[in-house]
Length: 224
Image (cartoon, rainbow, N blue to C red; front, side, top):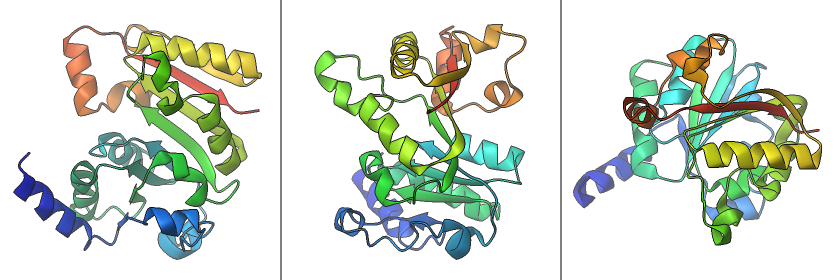
């Protein structure tokens, strides 16, 4: 994508009523006005809030919001040119149960109050295979502690990835920390009992992985 196109999207992002872009300082100083007030200030209802971390163009968030109108969805990503697509599509389709949040995931506790979130999806994150990059791995123990803070006590997490490494790493970490694995499969498209939303909602990259015959793994778990 050319720089002119990116700049155009960044400008358009500023006009979207369903896209929020709090600055780092606002988050660090605990001045984000939607924290703890997403139900009241944006969704205008008390339905469960579901996050997708690293949502990219928002395909999965949009797919889930269509399938589950009784829930609220928030797609989170730092890439403005990508998140533009999801926010724009949601506006064009008049989706009322979805919003987008442009921010760094490491500051997630500054955007949501304790227990405000019911579910978290992590879909096809960078597995950060090199040892020195483990601090950026979205399922490392530091990130899990952040998610635990904002999740409702009965909240669940989902990890869907093409990385067998990340799948195995996360299982080992969860077992070591005493968290509860509710469901795990190393190749959901070859599992006839896989939950429907895992098969019927696919991201752009997921379709590419499937075309290459790469297995898609899935984990569902609680943070105890």
